[in-house]
Length: 267
Image (cartoon, rainbow, N blue to C red; front, side, top):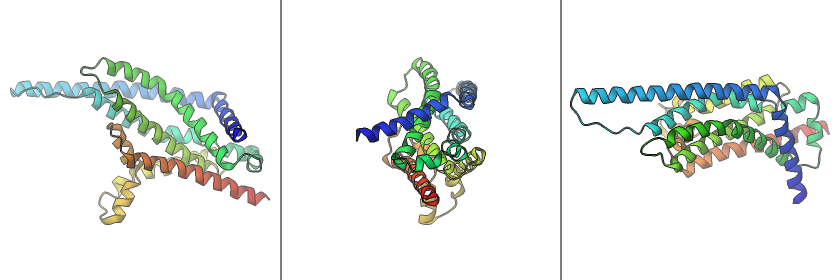
């Protein structure tokens, strides 16, 4: 057991170090922070303008002022923008997880090593998720600073549950991207295919909106956007958690099977 954990941690440590040694990873993080900061300011300004407009309308018609939960609206809108931004960022983080191994010729060493394919896949995925968390934490800090000054204060449970949804969404896309990366030695192709798959799972609910019957319900349930939106509302929905966890598990499983197939092809 200790040997297995040590092997897994070695993969995790190596992969995480590769992110911090890669100039591309810093460029991705910098662009993510810049765009997130711009969108946060734009979202906050837009919501404040809407609230001011509603107040002026109510005063004009002499109606009572209606309370507006500005922090909640800002959080939902901003996380929705971040999720859309992640559709581009996450494929770039996952594209080299296995494609680089194929390109360097080291995938065969991993496939035939004593470390199980599951341990390798899990270590690589957790390294990518850890790097994403490092990108997300500064954003959460300035969000928390802004929301702390709101009156009434936002429930801390809503803040953390909504960001948990964002993290699970990122992990799901990274896991599926890792599987696609295991199929090719082209990082660019892996990124494009991952983006296409994530986008398809993102809009499948809208695409099947007019579909009736159980088929439409099943296809709508596959939507990443539906389950993400449920969590951003601060609702702990076990169905949404289970579905996002299923995508994560599916990516790891398919990756392990792809590497196992590669090992048999080489034997």
